[in-house]
Length: 343
Image (cartoon, rainbow, N blue to C red; front, side, top):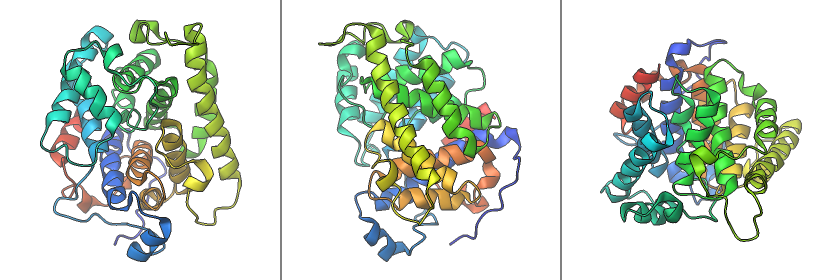
């Protein structure tokens, strides 16, 4: 068990991509054993503070980190060519490889598996995606989009929504993925964790009527949907609603209860974002506690904790985490390579 890491007030920018990627994996590993457990059982097994140290040699992650790496490598392979024509086949290749990998044995989500099946068959992605799904599988893997240093905010938005849309076609999945990537970007660029609710609300309001047809094509065309603005505004409105819940929760005293009671269980995209934000902001001065709080939840604990870790790591860099964890986490070599490329 580790004592709280002393977080510097302004960590070096050069380590923030690594800090975010490793934070994602650390949170994933801490939350994996607690997913599907009630909070009382988590307390019984780990104590009231929840899981606070990696277990296993190496500590195993779930499909959250695996798919985050798939997105990361697709972006890495694309280099500066961040266009839908370049990125779609690279994302498709990485997603299908993940789906067919023998390491894909970590209780992956059915939406991702079904959509990847269609992608593997060669279907156009708009035919392969699960149109009505806003599961958190789209934004649990989007962290790398916020870390690529060459993306302007328009490119970040398009890439974040495209990688989501390959499997999750619901507008809230698209909007929540963009907000997650945007949160990682502004933290990497120096914003404070406590500033995030206001920054994300402002972003959501400004993007509410923006449909990115150059990235999404005719994805908006659904029964009872009259136009693309109506389609995408629904997603942003649901994200704004959960940001309201986050603001209300943060305004109340923290009695150490289950974050899911305040901002949702995290199985769907906007709730995973809000509950991870809650954990990261409540414990902005104690990174390991942010992960432990995410893992001590009654909902999608690994996804909540992995996003909390991505946020905290983007804010503070590698100094946020216990130094000995780096060599104890699964896929450390890939996390190191991608982090070094973007740091």
